[in-house]
Image: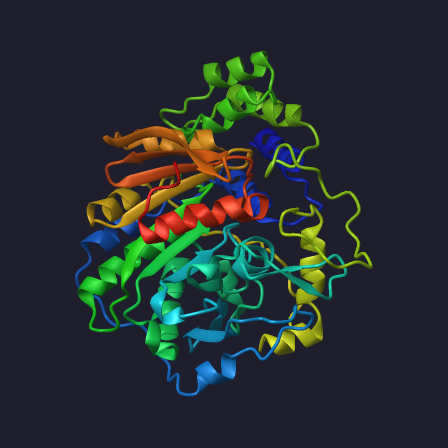
Length: 480
């Protein structure tokens, strides 16, 4: 067993570049630790399906808190900001003193006519605000000086009102006054707290109660998103509190199934010239993907596979790595260029006292990700996705095709397990007279690739990402 633990650690170091914390690192840290510690597989979600005796969740008084959460101005933001933005805390457990932090941006015009979106980053344990809002799909990005912001012309609040939720407690500005909460965190508690957050958020922003609502996320949000959606559906049926008008979910480069049952990771390595023929053959000879069992010979070849990758950024295999993570005396950043050192600028900005005051956040040593002793996680979320599809909910999966953390091939293997009927066959979709990616529509599910994007699709291809998500929200075909 110790030999396996050593191999796991080495694979993690080789794959993830420990010097920079991001959700790719935390995702691989999780599923490597899973395999090394007899990770318990909860049957909570199956039991939840059978449960009938629901009781309403905690709802706190929200009078006056909407106005208190409105942001006057973020330090260093550009001029002519034409939309409202809010930030603050919502208590999800008053006894434990557990509260989740959110950042909310409305559309620039006619916000009452646009849907409501909840965005979730993965990890597990990484910030939807720091990464999702400040580096991907939010209205601003942080300049190299770590002090000023520039506008993201392809922000998703151009087409929806967007909530960025830092979840679970302990991530970013979210917190608990009961430190043992951090040792009891897992899929179940995260879904339940996020549901309680939403019910209370809608009390604080009652004008959105009847609005079409969508949940979108990436990476380990492949668990968060369908589990929260499923929790909403079952609570909508069985409680007398606010019915959340959930219409659909979408997940990008989503961790849907455990790596031990998905050969898609190693197919991707080999097909993109990252692994040798011998290593690829060894993995498919000795790894039992059908039953998810890991022999010593299998792990030896897995170790070799990750060793062969070399020092690359596995979130985008063709992107440069951050070699000099320091602030620079320059501004005027461009959304069309994703600086590999953006994490450095963003973390400095969010740790500025003036910024934290503007966000109505508690003084915090803000970090992008928090390590957890994750307590429960199913080996696959496909049964939950099937239940959502059966309910008639819109389900989209999308993949940046340059990601080796949760590669497009892993997602395709997962979809193929569902054995779905094809409604509209595989085709290219276009933007600005170039192929933006590919799309295939199944009965109950749509799968989209985004060409030239890695794990963080809205960072690498902001315009293509906006086109894709507009198609999802409005129910219109991607451009021919």
